[in-house]
Amino acid sequence: MPILSTEYLLLSHGPSADMLRIMWRRPVSLAELQQGYEQVRAAAVRFRAPLWLVDLRSPGLPRPVEQGHWLHELFLPESYRFFAEPLRLACLMSPEQLAAVWYDPVSTANARTLTDPEQPFQLALFDQEAEAVNWLTQEIV
Picture 1: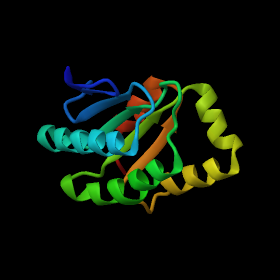
Picture 2: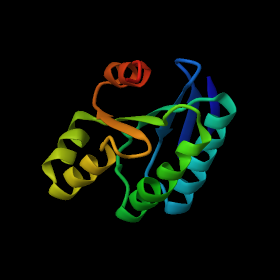
Picture 3: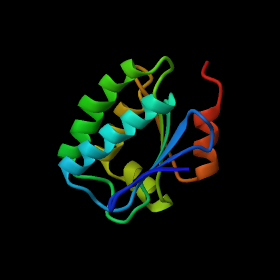
Picture 4: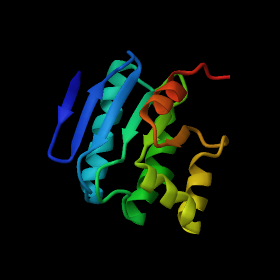
């Protein structure tokens, strides 16, 4: 069920009650990224939805370094306090995007940092939607 639709972001609730689907429609500016993720967090708090399926398959993504810094170093680490359960993000990428992450040493290092179990959020990268949804909905051990 759509919650928010802008020229650059589509936010939907579901497929489970505690999950949001975030689809970036095009590359965004830092201001759009910040506004979009603030709206995502507000909806997630309203719906008690700490599970986020983030669709990054839009052409032109991933984002520039300064946007990644804001998202991964500032926004996500502070967002955990809004939820009783861990904030979990399954990032859905095309097979080519995912391969590029593991091909580039800087991207690989960033991915390892983001998926580190010591982060105050849980993040994983996928190229298959069913696997991403399964990971999001699995029991946390």
